[in-house]
Length: 87
Image 1 (cartoon, rainbow, N blue to C red):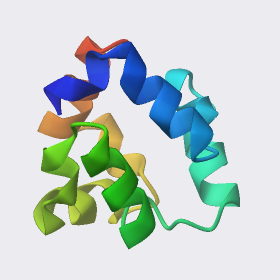
Image 2: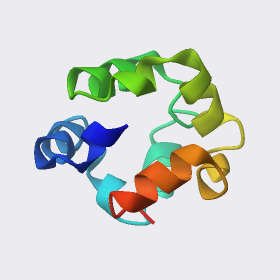
Image 3: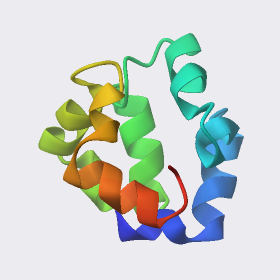
């Protein structure tokens, strides 16, 4: 997920209606969009096209979505996102 640190990724996510990804509201943004975490294939394709090929891996999608994104708070994925400023 190292590509998440690239600013163009945030622009891509914003155009997909996920502009909240840059702050803590990401959880509410994804939830209110009915995306069930990041398991929605459209979101995975959007992230993949932005250079986040790891998000297309089904294991990663399951990790992110297994508890309504709460898994982001205690996983290797969370630490990666945290280093990109998405604490």
